[in-house]
Image 1 (cartoon, rainbow, N blue to C red):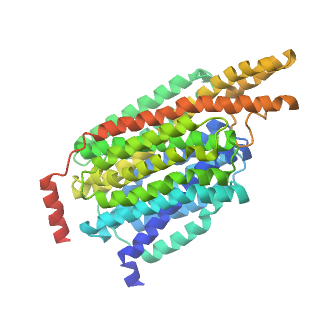
Image 2 (cartoon, rainbow, N blue to C red):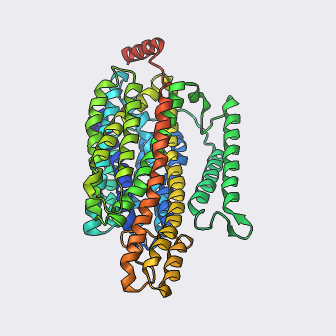
Image 3 (tube, one colour):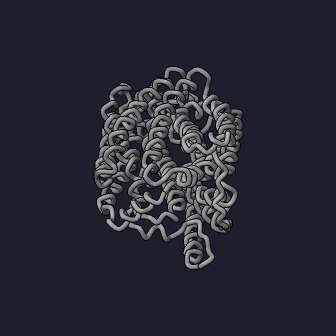
Length: 535
């Protein structure tokens, strides 16, 4: 057993299994959104919280969990994270209403936050410098497999066993991962003393919660009064103020000799790292900004089953898997920005094609060129971004830098679900009214006003856009249902087109920022070679 536990590849296999479990769950949930909406009679803003409850806790607690790993040992924290995630998956599968599911997903996010940052310090301790590139490549391949498996496995499970099965499938995986973690991962303890910035965690959490709650719930309250004297703008403003106080607090802790900030400003002195945090934030924003409207569209507008939607979307990660293999071979030979910039632009171009092809009566394979192009682009983004971001950083900042860059990427996704979700709800509300007014001319006079009012008031009661909705839940005579379906599907497409422009613009801006990535410094190269020789 001792020999197995000291084998780096055995430990790596457990770490990638934990990674696979969390990534698989994330992509499965994206495909299951319409079924969850329908099954729990949830509104769009509620299902956004199903995504955000996970992402918010995950993002805010990543760096804190990395510190806990330094204190208590990464193996112990990894095992604890697996237990929390597995228990939360069981609670998610048992959810009886949207609130229950949101709370359970938040607990899942906590589990992911505890286990996710433990892999990097373990790999840096177990593998010499010259082998770490191959280790990160393995991580990338497993991530690609999880992304590919998510839509297809998720679609199969939802179609045959219901949406609850996408959570319960994590239970046996979690039990196996926990047992293997105790058996195969060595108990490495750096012995460094750390203090947790509890006040910083509270400030960041409260600030982000205020901003994101305001964005998600804004359309429901017409961007006005929530209760009493509390308004949506006041909630968002309070969140921004709290986040500004958080940054000030972090600046003070950065200046103190014995201070240990959650956000160490030292890493931002490196230009490449700072630029890659922007790219990762853009990717976090873009991925959710693309998939949120697209997964709803494919099932609620095109009427695809979850498995058919999953198989259609799987084209993209398959293309990504192919191009990432090529990029892995090139990233050490050329400046990573010459892969990164074309990758970002290809993802933007492929998304533009998908947005252009999305019509109320489109075929499922009409999106294939866009999915292939965007997937090839993604493969050229994930491979070089970490290499560029951490290449010139001192070794003692490696763990902190990884926590920061992953946190910022996740926050990009959180803000995407809030901003894109709010924009999509607003555009749907306007489009439903306009389409309903235009279509009402086909109805007898006695039905016209109620027809328009039914759609116009949808935003105030929480838009329901699950696979079983499509406008047919409105209280209308049977002969009006076909017209209601027409209004809903065309209104959703009308709203989807401008919504998907948001991630496209963000990707183009990220590509523009990547132009300023600098090449490898000769001095840094010599230091890395010396470290490799010593190792």
